[in-house]
Image (cartoon, rainbow, N blue to C red; front, side, top):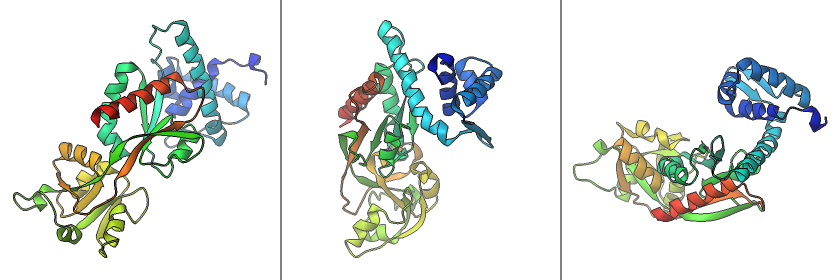
Length: 302
């Protein structure tokens, strides 16, 4: 189909539908009626010869073709937004724009609020979208363009990706303070092994703690695993269990939950905290500004 026969406003509707998964929310976002969005979707289906979005119990789900089209369409719209900012640099060029940052919830818990504040100072009215990822899947997420930037403990070996080290991480322990003796501020290795453990893992049964104990000929008993650091206050309170997690998350969780923060009695290797992005000679200026703000934010805290 020739582009002259297509109303390019339909692309804005496509983007809103894909990101909101709802015709009513897309209409609210675009400032139009729901019937107008439904009519636009019918026209989009004719243009692309595909249903694009199918109704499910949780709203509208994109088809495979829609997922393939999304990064191309959003890139085109972002180029248009950039062009308007060039005409009037003093305008609020960030309003209506968003940047998706992939990170696991330990980084989100520890650094999310600070990043929101720091980025708002240099890109007012920009919306940040935090999306869950981790080092095993982050490269694909960046290449699929479901995220623009990512903060993880590695995972950027793909040759089309670039990375920058933001800092180093280590580990600490969280326990219910009621499980400690009065005045107790640490665990011996023997007491550590004797306790039940909560493992935070994206899917594995073995964690870095198990590897460290195995090197000493020791093992632990994991009573439960979770994929989310945010669940730890609810899983640890009222128990004798211990969780060994990255220190940045342990500090933030302890500060808000009342859990006791203890040094890890086991020597575990430190790890790099890295920022990754797609290598491109024409990087979106807004993504570049957010990237610079993230680097500056970590530099101030180091």
